[in-house]
Image 1 (cartoon, rainbow, N blue to C red):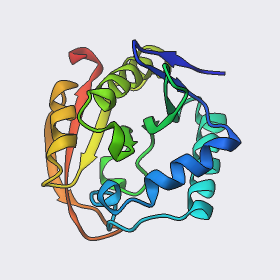
Image 2: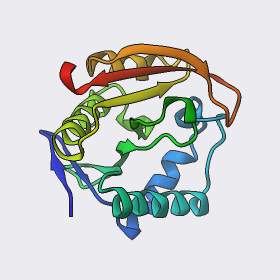
Image 3: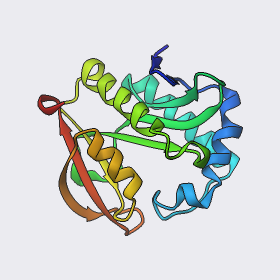
Image 4: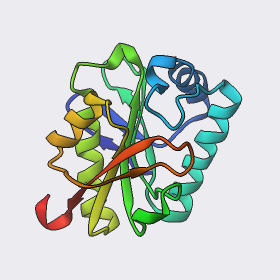
Length: 175
């Protein structure tokens, strides 16, 4: 079972009792504002999403980690790696992504978690590059992307929702 530890976080595989706390994150319109078309997700959709994340781990050897606050055991959200099938024009690629509940914003936790996941990707999974896809206006995510050392690759449109997106990349040689 793959786990990563940072000074404040435990990045781990998903457990059945994570569905409720993650559903609360996914139900917050402010959290979901920059995800796809901005729609919130209910607990059933969240459970299906967790099952899909776990399936990626089983088939690809990497995936999205549950992010747990080490001091409290609270689920903060997720970070990790996935293949961005929704955007064929950037494939082949591995994407770094994150989503934390609002109570965990502004503390550097997403950057801490994402940096650990990027290291894991380059050290353990073998991609030559990692991308991040963000909607213009999502300044918080763009600040994390900058801290990770990623560079703008292109601007395009998310074919699933029609919203504009920016694609950033970090090459193994630059990490």
